Amino acid sequence: MMPRLLRLLGLLGVMLAVSVGGIPAWGQDVIAPEAPPPPQVEPPGPPPNPGAIWIAGHWTWTSGRFVWQAGRWETPQRGAVWVPGRWKKTAAGWVWEPGRWRR
Image (cartoon, rainbow, N blue to C red; front, side, top):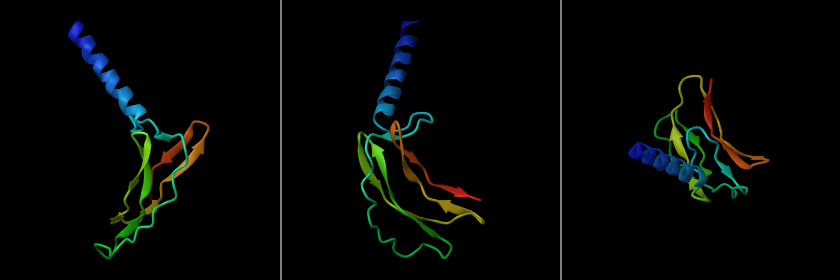
């Protein structure tokens, strides 16, 4: 019984550490206590193929601070449109709504 309880307590500790650090744990939203800095300017360079689109970088909240996530080229599936992610102000703080492909 005791080893099982210790494993459970260890798992709960990991879950708490992950959620406090700003990394979502099992579907939790990422919430930052402050607004993100202005976006960085990134020259995208040439696309890897003719159908690729540039997905701009964005700020992520990790380990109690904002970290820049660089932009990237992606080739969309036919008929899909990229909807950029955004930081949204809420009563709990700033919540990241990830970008997604929309058909």
